[in-house]
Image 1 (cartoon, protein in one colour):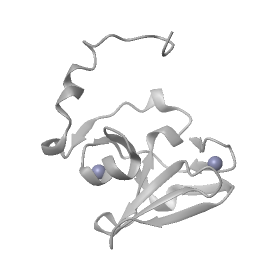
Image 2: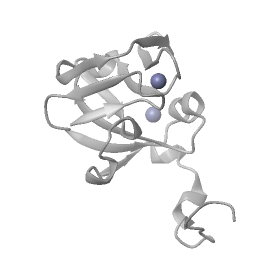
Image 3: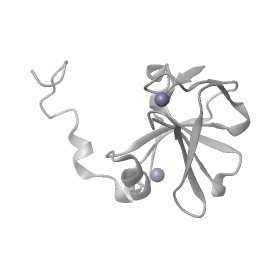
Image 4: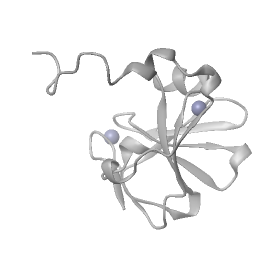
Length: 129
Ligand SMILES: [Zn+2]
Ligand SMILES: [Zn+2]
């Protein structure tokens, strides 16, 4: 499976299987990604092969690090010492996102309540008309 950043400078390959696809609703992910929740494809760190470009590491806490494209800052993966040897690959960094549906919600104690009504709100196929 292949992946890339927004500017296409970073390209990578995932050599093994995705272990689990998770939606994380924790406050750290919400803040560091500026998103209502974050979806990760959990995989072995050893299975990540950088093909081109450069990653920049950002220290989030004493245990958590975020790796982004050094050019466009697209997030590629996170690592946490609590889950040693694993990469939390950003689902959007992978090129086949539809093939990897989320399987579980984590940290639902801090999940935004309006997420439960996503399917009921007005929805436009192509964004703002
Ligand atoms: Zn980039
Ligand atoms: Zn999180």
